Length: 172
Image (tube, rainbow, N blue to C red; front, side, top):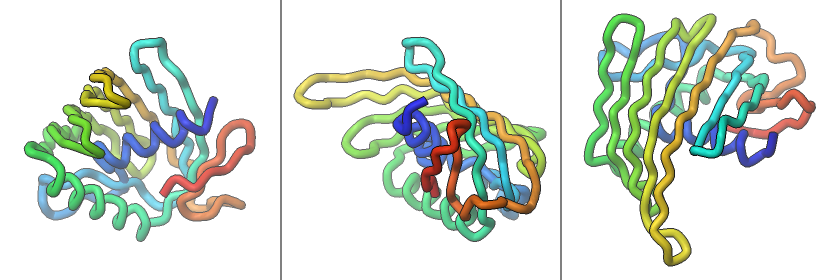
């Protein structure tokens, strides 16, 4: 799978919802964050041309995860006319209407799991606007399933992910 899929999937998850860790903030309108440690993440992205899958092993650092969630929250407050986070049972939903890099983005993100051992994130979005002088509209579904592998990240550095081919990339 291409580096583009890796980057697009991880950036989309961070930019649209920052959905990760073991604890929820005291405010019910916060998104969950992943537990620090080594995670296996299976991401499937479909933009209407059939699904593309990527499996990564990633090292999550607690401080970086909190900082990413905080930066995402601040970015959404600046760029979104709607950014509603609700929680019902073990599911957190983010409904957003935003403008990023001059393009409109409508998205609904559903996050479930305990974010300490497993999680599932499903993002359904539509992005539209002008690109190279033409109007462009893209519907996208991204599904990510995460499984906690343990506290030790081995030879992965915090914020680094490795594909099944052994290629490493910094994602946080």
